[in-house]
Length: 479
Image 1: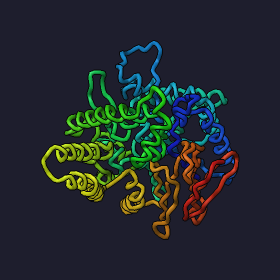
Image 2 (image 1 turned 45 degrees about the vertical axis):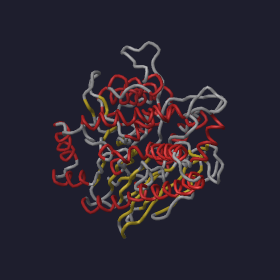
Image 3 (image 1 turned 180 degrees about the vertical axis):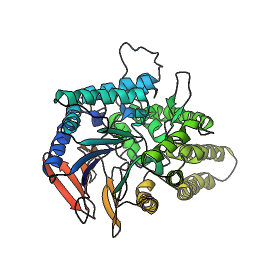
Image 4 (image 1 turned 135 degrees about the horizontal axis):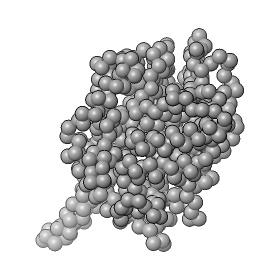
C-alpha cells in the first residue's frame, strides 16, 4: 500500500506554568498548541488520496523532560535539594512521574493522537535528546497506556504495530530515513545512544549530555531566557542590560546561578566521562536487534554509528568555553595584571596604556583563536550527514529535527534533506526581544506519487504556508 508521511519534531511539550512577571514565559498556557496539532492531523487525513497508508512520525524532542522543575508534594522517593530547583534526576521512577505530569497538562494532544490512531493510522515516535527518558520501559508504559486509553475512548483498540517507539532512527527502504539529529551535535550527543544510562545509587540514570544538563542546571534557573532559541547567547553589554532589566531589582540572581551552575555542570560532565569509559554490553545487543528490525546487516548499522559525533565530554576546553568560564579566567588574569602593574615602580603611562590597549587586543586575539565550533555548527553540517546516510542506505528523503531551523534542501536529483523546525516559542526578530509562537512546521512526504512529492509547511490557526521540493520557509513575524 502506498504511504504518506507527516513528520513533526521539537514540540518540546512540558508542564504549563504562568507567571505574571514573565518568568518561564516559554511554558505559558498562551503557547500551548494542542488544538493546532489536532487540526493538522485532521487536515493530513482529509487531503490524503484514498488507499494511502498514513503515518505520523514524531521525530524527537516531542516531550521535554529537561524543562520540568516541579516535584511531587508527597514523593515516594527521596528528593535532593538540587532537584527542587533543577528538576528530578533522570531515573526510571522519577521520569515516569514527569511524563505523567506532562500528559496531564496536554490532554488535547493525547486526544489528537488517540483519535488519529483510532481511525486506523500509525504513529512512529523517534527519541531525541530532550525525551531520552523514554528509554526506560516504565516511562514508555505510562505514555502507551495513556494513548491506549485515548484510543479506547474513541471506541477502538490500539493494535500492537500502530504505535512504535524507536530509540535511534526510522527507515523505510527506497523512501525515507528519519532521525532526530542530536547525535551529530557534540553538545547533545550520547556516548552510547542505545544504552544511555550510567549506574548510580538510585539505579540506572540517563547520562545527560552537556546541552541537557545546561538546561536543567542553568536555564531552568534563568527563567527570563528562552531555552528553545539562541537568545541566551549575548555579548557582555546585552548580558548587563538583561541583568538590569530582570534581576537588578528582584531577589533572583543571574551571576550566582551562572557561577555555581557552571561549576556543577562541569563537575557532572567530568563524573560522567569517568563512567562512560567502556561500552555497556546492552548497547551492542540493542544495535544488533535494531539491525534485524530494519532488515539491515550489522556492518551497515556500524557505518551509520560511525557518523555520530562523540560528546563534548571528550573536549574539556570546549566545555569551559561554552559556559564562558574561559573568558572569566582571561578577564581575571587581566585584572590581576592591572593590579600588579599599579604596584610595580614603572612609568605611569605604561600602567595606563597596557590595561587600556594591550589587554583588549590580547582578549580579541584569544577570542579569534579560540572560537572553534559553536551550537550553530551542527546546523551547517546536517546536510552533509544526510548525504552520508543516503550513500549508505537507499532513500529519497533524509529528515532531521533538532536545530529548530525549518529548511528543505535538494541534495541530488532524487534526494532531499528536510529539517522540520520547531513548534516551541521563539524570539521575535528585528531586535524586538518578545516571545512569540513558534513556526509550527511540518513535512509531508507522499511516495505514492510518481515524483515522490516532498512538502515543508507551516501551520498556524488553521492556515498553512507550503514549500515543495526545495527552498526554505521565511521566518514569520508574530501571528
